[in-house]
Length: 182
Image 1 (cartoon, rainbow, N blue to C red):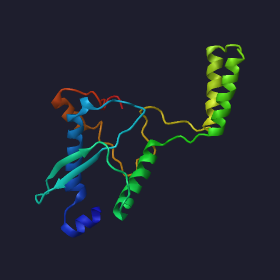
Image 2: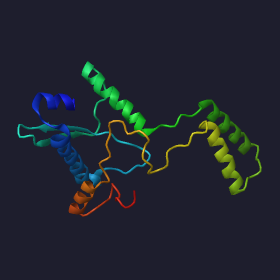
Image 3: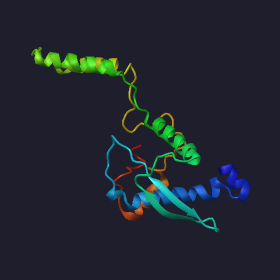
């Protein structure tokens, strides 16, 4: 798309449009940060409708908090299939063995009902790690705060110097943390 825009209009997406789009998104997130619930175990997808006028100025039309991922048309399918793939790459869901999970749960329930001997803290932790390694096929989930290995077509825009600038303007940093922590 970037190439087509440039070829058709001579407009550089990377230099003239994308920085404005990024700024609109950061400003909108800073403006409503107090209304967004922080949940590190979840994600939310926002759909931004941005108009580019004849002077190449970007204007926010609306933000959809639950954009449709339906693929009713060929264009929908082309765009949203890639988006869904990128979201899955970004989230890096850990593949687990459902059968092994049920085996471990059944064993642990039976141990509890039989009144098994309580394990010490260290021993219990070793058993838990062994069970999780077994269920997760040896894979380790990404640590909290660790960047994903694949970002797809996503770009991290917060925390960033631009985000920090707007947060200082409004006098707070509730949601995005700070650059120093990352």
